[in-house]
Length: 480
Image (cartoon, rainbow, N blue to C red):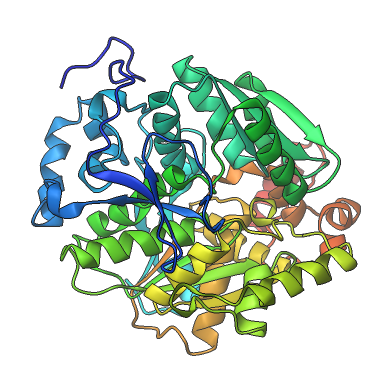
């Protein structure tokens, strides 16, 4: 494949071929279509979200998923090295020479009986998809490479996002690496971990901190992007979700193309769950898989909009006509109470998920369930992930805590094959980890006490001793 000398860019072109790809309103009653070369986040006709849609019968789709294995022999080529773009045939909205990649998506699916035992699974049935191994340390790179590629094709010079941290780190990295655009990120006051903020600052992003939370930042970034003509890369952008589909393709690849029984994923802005549902629907329609796994979306209790609407108020996809009045009433109640999301799992600390409707569709497609877990359950699950060698940020552990809850409820059987998604690396939020394991009660209370975390059941506390050889040896012997 011909490409430029820069390993980040696979040549230069702004000529978009829109023949077999387009944007389409997700509402079946509308289904308005738009050119793939347009920058849109919603339908003009009805205001609904958009999908990237393909005329599959006009495209060279492989007969079997095993066809993609031949790309491993071409890992010297940037598109084959990427865990997103080696599946280009299943997200063909851009020409190969337009794609921007930094080698994202080289993430492992790890079988772990240790975490499986904690959840209550039979040996060999629990897998963790470790998206924290992406270049920026989270799953966001899967979607960012796709959105950034689209931004490049339409000639954008600035790209913006609202973020609890991971999206901003990913956007800043792609802007910094490619030198194609300036990153503009919006964060709420006190709502981002230093591990994530340090990435955005180090990568040179213009960082705008506003009074409010993520939902406030999201509202403003949409206004500013429209007014100033800045390309918006939050997951309301349909191209973001095209990249995130490939997380499921890599899971299938690691399982020798066998479909698991369950996919368990944290629910924040609901981009991942929406993308996963779209991926499985497309694969099943194309005849590349013979069944669709079940999907479990796990909210943190302090940011539980999906759980409240789905479990508490009966909101459903309803063949593309969800009851908007249920959503409007709940949001009005939040406004009246001045309700703000509050959870140690900052990456999913979101009250107004922009992909709510797409997630309802995914839950319908995947016979899904929704659960909520407490910060205590999240941190206990996180400690078990770490104890088995795969440190993750708190939001990631919501998937493990949720799987444990579903196992206890008998929804997941011990013999089911379950894949939990670990969305971000441990070092994204080290403060929570250290506070959980600390022997300093004041520090524990400062970081975790206000969120209802009363104990650290699996704490691995440092042993304090005097600087004396005999005492050090004794401490090691006593604690071995």
